[in-house]
Length: 228
Ligand code: CA
Image (cartoon, rainbow, N blue to C red; front, top):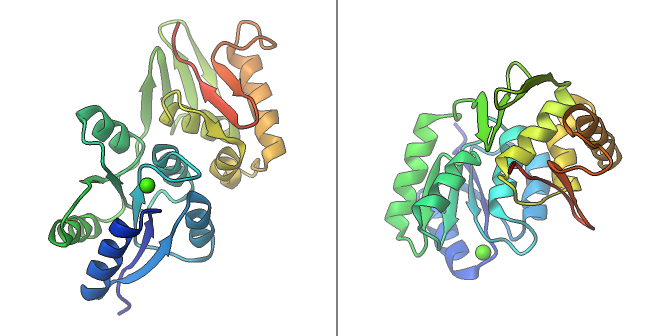
């Protein structure tokens, strides 16, 4: 049987080496990526059993990337690595789709313990409802509820797109990530991301031309603003 294949997405040399050395010694197959972009490229061509994902990458926020991967690779367990240890960060990581958390600096023995546990647990359970501010998205039903106010029915592409914005919890998400996230709905290229956003705005904004909820982030993409 082939050993589990683990993708390490980490720009820092020290913790990357610790991961590589420890995982090799434990006879896992290891591939490293130094940026989110590289990680996504690897994931397109190779099937991995687990990803170790750094929270701060040079080209992306690890939380947004975790959200993206949750949509594109729902069966892939993710362990987040971070120097931040605050409970809130931990919660955000888990909500973004990570199955576990590793605080830097860590010992190889701790890393291996968590890797073994995550592999033993298998694919993460699907999350079907996401709450953010007054919003509640039901991923399975493809409905978006706003407080007690109204409920919208969404197409698959619309649901995937808003799921990713909600999982990012107000942080900006770039167009490429959104395109990747909606790709499997058959509506996924950067142009169709803009089309989907327009459609969503028509559905849920009071004034679609002056949107308050799905906010454009110039030269990057979009974020969701759940404040009322
Ligand atoms: Ca880093």
